Image 1 (cartoon, one colour):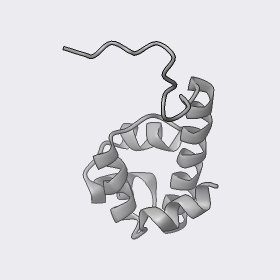
Image 2 (cartoon, helix red, strand yellow):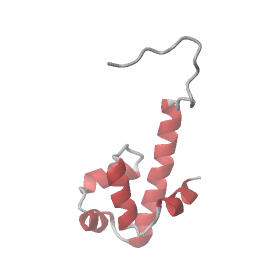
Image 3 (cartoon, helix red, strand yellow):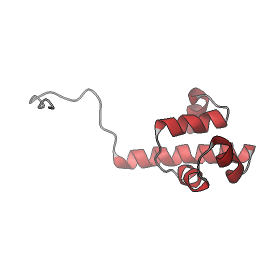
Length: 89
């Protein structure tokens, strides 16, 4: 059972807005697209990392994904998360 919020307590972190989430996912998708395109075709890359072509298209368009899928994409692009996020900001 969840604990009830105590009145007067502020959350430790600000909540991220849906608009900001969409903006960041779009930026991530653009970086994925440019990195993948510099390397190979969409079909070839999707096959290499064992995801569907339609899923890859969705991710490059800013679609949401599991963290495990994101890590699989980074591994396929030979990038560390640090290298990738330098490109995002």
